[in-house]
Length: 625
Image (cartoon, rainbow, N blue to C red):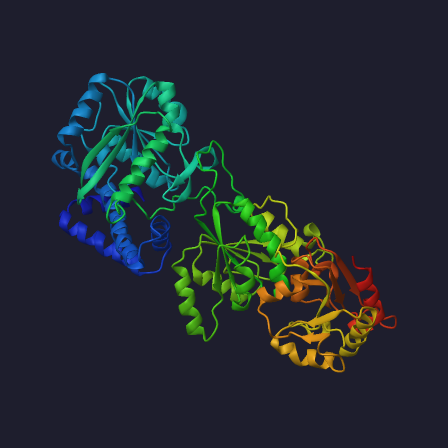
């Protein structure tokens, strides 16, 4: 491998710069044209940094930055074969920079040089003019390469031009003594120093910034400089150097402030800064992704929500409502994240009004081509994470096509979900029987696997709706399972008992348009002023307000009953074939669960909800406080 690299570098060094430059532009255009991971990172980084830019402008800067990445590669391969004259020409030093360098060399003191990760940063190492004098040495800290051959070649190339190299793994201790001897040390800084770094914001995103420069300056009494080799043409840069004075912030933060100003003040986003790298990785380890881990932070009290989390919601209203406490926990766990819910269009009215939700994106419908076009539009949003609460191949494919680099979900035994990047695999021996584990608890385990450490809050949603003491709501339907519906005759008997008990009582029937006929059959024979059919007349937001205005609500195990419980209305829920241990409403509001009795003759058969008598339900309504 090392021989191949050297041979490639030698061949490239023989080519004219004009040819190499055209090749870099060709390769940069191809990288942006062909779908690949690097293209996604470039465009995502630019979108986060410049949310106001049009997509076409991002593509232009992306192409240039991709070309600069290849220019970096060509420079690294060819500079070991440069002539002395070529080495002198890679870094232009104007009068201002020359005076600073002369002053540094005269002082004969240790110097730490912070260098941003731009395409020709190695021009500083190659140039014979960027060196200390009086026998002092020039060193650099580098990140070891995973490939031993490439790592060895990098070290050999830098040592060949009289650069002392220090691996970042052991640099802290070796470099201190190196600096104390009056040498210069260059440090290529980035935004991914992990939990050990000092945390703040860089280009609108949470970043971990190295503390090494401050440690070096303190222990070796070194001066700290920001050196920017500004690209002026192919393989040629101009030195811009600034001394950093530690006053209100650390040297590293000062360097990042200078770099951010350079990027912001550039008309095209400084494409020579390598946008191709995924620099903001501190908060994305899957084991801790849902918690905001930081220390020694320099971050504002009100954390900007610039990290994009998308939540692919379940397909049924009851499941959607049960996700509400989890959305709240995710918000508290990652206050730096904006939450976009990706759900069926019919859920928009209720989801957009949640305090924990920043945006709503409807799941596209129609033909496959139409859905694909809409999902392609969503790709331009560049979410960093999608949490998929649905458990289907289609939802996984949607998340994959949106292009989030991390896609998390829950996998049951015997299932395979190849479109997820990481999955919480449910294990009954560890996590408990599915027949005894509530759905919300199961989802909580799923999120805890990805780092959630917040307690769930089951306080009802406050709609500020006044309850009417003489208003009762009834939800007689069940959209996803007709066997969960209590018989019409039972509803009629219950309504009769309720009306006879209270002459001032009004009963409202709620549901979808498809349940209007069911409601009409139920209210036959009753006064239209006392039993009112509202099926199909409300969206979900209006339904929530209607249920919130009732003194009590009665209904089958359905999404509407979960919504009633979520807005804090005392509710009586009728269960037949479904298991209340798993799917009962979860909010802290008065709740009466009525389970149909088991069939004595055939106890293995699921309970028939029709076996639940009207008198038993009436008694449950009376008992409900």
